[in-house]
Length: 416
Ligand code: ASP
Ligand code: MG
Image 1 (cartoon, rainbow, N blue to C red):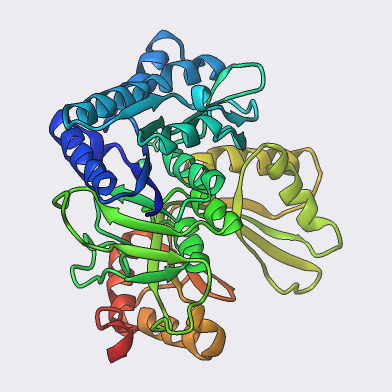
Image 2 (image 1 turned 180 degrees about the horizontal axis):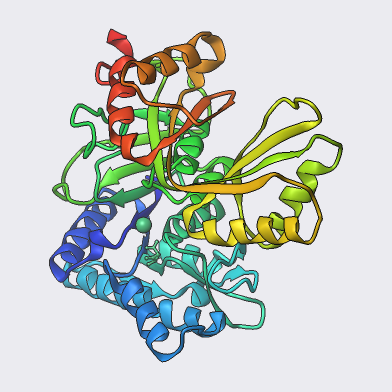
């Protein structure tokens, strides 16, 4: 007997039929003798609909009220799933985040979980009841409803699994696991049986949308065993999806590259011809950070005749804001620059794999493959297990296909 947390995303509970299907799978695990906690998202599209209602009333709604509204989506699905389980003759109870007491900070619309009181959940489980918990939401210490940021139900699932010391946290979604890359772009993309937590974290932060980044961080920190599976499979399916392991299993078949991620939500800003002196990077990055803009890649050229160029990437929807900040700083004379320029038609493509640690020459293989297609590289950055390049966004699909082929990702580790 195991204690399992299962999280179902919006498409998995997107209709009454699908909710019934979820109930059948949950009931099967229960029948097999496991204790099951289910975390659900709102029905597909519902959170968007709710937030749009608020925007109709005001262009600038207060975040506290947005949370009150957005959290209702999940309150509907927990009730529906509990009823569907009752229909199958099993005991089930639904709880909102506040009822469990998923305590968060008060950062409305992007709150962080501080503590979970798992007492009530444990009592229900002990008495054979399936516990259904609303994802995406919590409560602050004053009792205000909070939400965890878009895609936050993944984090709710992982956090509950950590608090309950669950044997496994299963994330059911509309794909049957983590792939070497997006199969919509590369039809030969292969489902991975396993991937390490570190690789998953890189893939998620480089643009793979299978799991919310914060949930992967959480899983790594609390050593939660995570598995990604399809909720569209038959409820009796024995598919095993992709296991995200927090340790490098010794018998784990080891590919050098595990996956390729890409992100089109990118933009580049550059300060050209800035003075090459101590403090210059801070005078550029400082004001950007103070404006709450996240920067990702940062590149500074080698200085020549006292001047250098400085570039960084930002999220595309913060592009105008970032440009504005730099132009304002330049006008105020905080730093001197020949020009502030930018480009919001770029994309980032990254190859990720822990095998990189013990292999040399991968960056050269990567740039060779891109050169072969005439794709110009604008920026490169590397970490121990990742090489990322910034290219013109119109080449992103081509780049992903070419790299998938160059690294023979369709073949799997045995054949490579
Ligand atoms: N319903 C929320 C959203 O759409 C949370 C989630 O689905 O994970 O972002
Ligand atoms: Mg989701």
